[in-house]
Image 1 (cartoon, rainbow, N blue to C red):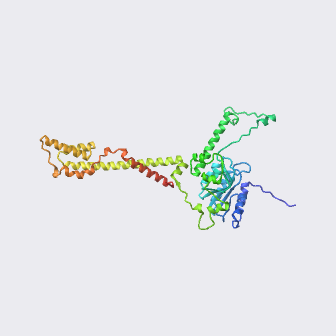
Image 2: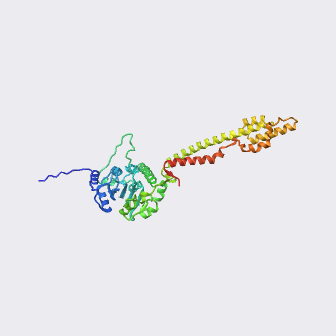
Image 3: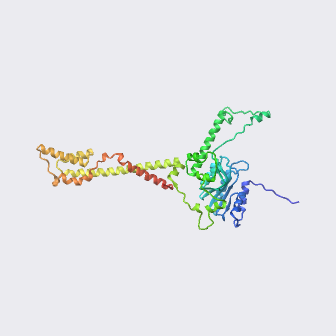
Length: 417
């Protein structure tokens, strides 16, 4: 009698085993390679250059669902594979649970390799949110995209229980009177809706961030729960392109040419200031504010420097006026009061006229220098730093602030259009 041994292992472990057992030298068409990925977990196609993660069922932790932690493990496995140049999600899914979704999206976001999404059949709800984590989303012509939002379903079985003669009696501890509220009550409905709205805010925020738009854009353009065929989804900005089939998708992102990556891999992904503000409003506000403050400080320092330079020029010009008759007292007072060179010259002239009218003998000019001879030389010093107001530096300060803000953004790899 023959003896058979049955070895049981988790599905995820089996698929990982199958993936590693595939012959890397086996040549097969893209369609065959893709089919293998659906049966073997994360697989590789296109001569091992593209890692494929197939999702053709709901997402979550229930029966016949793709667990998020299992998908995260596949992403990390392909990310660590030196032969794999890019990762693609092959999606046909109605969506699923929100619990675990954001964590998987974070794992994808940490990938150094480019990640793409291919949608065929349906890409809805949580599956679409997952797809937005990719750099580009492509769909076939017949694919339906959308169903963005959060919902919950409650089955009221009261009448059935009554028919069976059963009654459910619930006891709650003293300080847990709100635990598991009856969804039929007004308070229960209010709490459920509150929870759904909070989840929706996070859900929509992630999608908006990944697509480089605002949450309002998602509310207005992405259907509020409706599904669209790929052509309309493309018009609404929900996907990036339409392809004929999976082979066309692979050729678009990674052509068989050995001279380099595909069309999409060659694209430089430029993040503009507008997109940065939309995706990271709080961070953008902080960076811009820091840049503005740094610019203000730079402008203030520049203003102080110019003011000090003007003051030195004013005093130098006033000291030159000491050579004029009746100038000594006027110059001393002008230096102390912040009087301009032009006003000091006028005051000296008035002093000389006053002396001549009173019959007093004015002190002789030193070196035979006259007021007129100093006029041209002193004209350049007609600056009174005490009259320089903040408004006169406003344009320069704002320019400095923009320059420093641009430097902050440039350091972060953000370009201004």
